[in-house]
Amino acid sequence: MIAVDQDPLGVAATVVSAAGGLYVLTRPLANGDVAVALFNSTDTAATMSTTVPAGTVTDLWTGTTAGSVGASVPAHGTMLYRVIPSA
Image 1: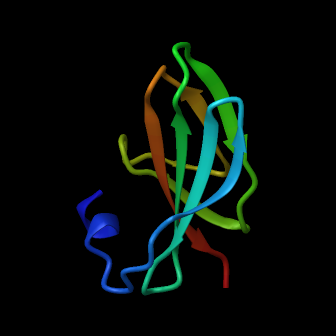
Image 2 (image 1 turned 180 degrees about the horizontal axis):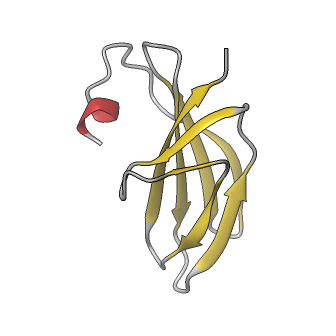
């Protein structure tokens, strides 16, 4: 989390999807990786997902890797991922 927050590229996240209080944001990182956030501003948990370039996806809360970006996001919660695109 700290590495994404303090990434030297310093580019702000961009909202790429917003519907019904559910937001997907992306942020390019200095080494070519991409940070992806799923933000649920509603009062109930929501299942959220988005497509990302092929590569390795790491859940920054748990440190686990997956093949996609998606989760049950708690009310007023955020899930954060780091995507390392395939070469």
